[in-house]
Length: 122
Image (cartoon, rainbow, N blue to C red):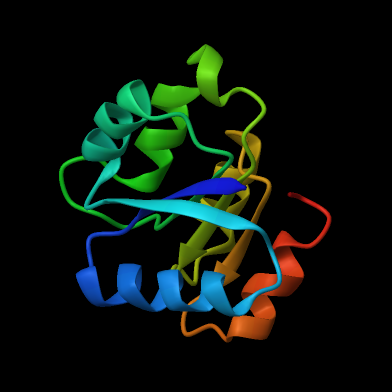
């Protein structure tokens, strides 16, 4: 089973992503949530996961700062990270990929887009 961490400052988006994950055929285990990058780092120290879905634009610590901060964490070195974002700027998306993101999906998204992005990664 694949444990997942969803990092987004919107509780509504976190709930939608949980529902979408359950609609995929992936063997999803526990789904953990964090409201920003700092909360996500704290959660990852307690609970290793097999997949991270993260927003880019968040308060306190955004998705790019989060990616930079976890690069040296042994427990997440091989964990695929997908950015889920409203970010229109290709620059930020490319920066996320350079920082180790395995890909991205733009909001608003469909269950099919999420499933397609995750297929082959997990």
